Image (cartoon, rainbow over all chains, first blue to last red; front, top):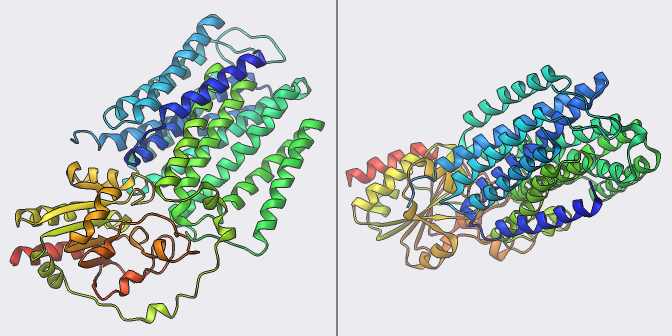
Length: 92
Length: 468
């Protein structure tokens, strides 16, 4: 990828990230942290790509470990966030 | 599938994550936001099986992916661990679980970077090596740091700041060696330096979190969460994935803002939180203080006090949740309301173990949302309040935060229950709160203590109040 494209994506994403959570009540801090946490579980995609690339047993072993950890992060994160938010439902 | 289609679907998943964070910022749309995020993540994961990303040093092979069985098996193992953990965890243990999930994410990012580095070998460009070094350092720090926060929250180790002789020096020396070895990896390109780097980074993560006091742990989790996001973005550069760059950067940026918001809610500067252990003065010995007399009462005394009150404010803390007394406290509140008493709950922003935690816990017990009042709303009303009942809370009502400069929670905004005409503390023992600080309010003449398990005590108060 062109470095300038990478830098552009990065900078724009920083501003979007700042903007979307700039005003959030403390009530939602816990679910928001948990939800953001689940999103970075998408490193699973990277773990699958490197597992496909791996050519030695060491590489494959580490990649498999990464897939296990990333899956826990992603799936567990979304499930637990949903459980928290379920309880806010029906208020007000 | 063409590269263009693959990238477009990646972009769609990135947009889903933006919508997810946006939704999560508002109570009405939060749950839908989380669903959109889960949808984006699922989409991204499925697509990766239908397109082979060529390694930097080779050409793409035909589908299916190599090692497909291993990949699917590892995902199944992850599902088998992650889903039950997320389903079964009690709401009181939520902060630990978030810390743990964040840690494994950081660990995964570090492993991904190491594998790709081993694979590229000398074929890696300078920029790729620099990004790899960054990911390994930050991913490892996030992993080991999160494990320590988990242990603190689970009370597997002390919740107080751990300060050791020359701690400041050791941490600084570790950080310098991490950076030095990082430079070595960039210059020399070897497997051994990279593994040394990973080891030192893990050590630094431990040392970095040990001195943080229990009450500040949530801020550290949030910061490590933002760190993990950045490592995912860096991996995206090395793996040529727009999606990883977008998702990682989003989490890094929003996590940073969230960390700052949390620190503000707790009246802490971020710097003070992270380095507070170095600057705080040692506390005066508390041994003598514990000998002082306190006024303890019976459930009947409490019931009488409540019966003649016009306005009662309930201040719930983590102890309430530990005793699973949410339903009993609601029963007490309903009973008082039926007697014409004005009842409100005063919720500190960090009541429980992290911001917003208590709201989740009370929502679980179906406490009406309109009875929950935030700190800024409730504080001016304490002077017209007859009784403030503090259940299993301590640090969030401790006047030391306002009048004892140098104590670990100094500067944190508190619920000013001391302004109420009477204060009742329901406590298991005289043990100080999570931050480990003596609370002067316990010795105040207008304070009455009711010792015992919060649920058992409340049940007795409810029956005594019914009998009146």
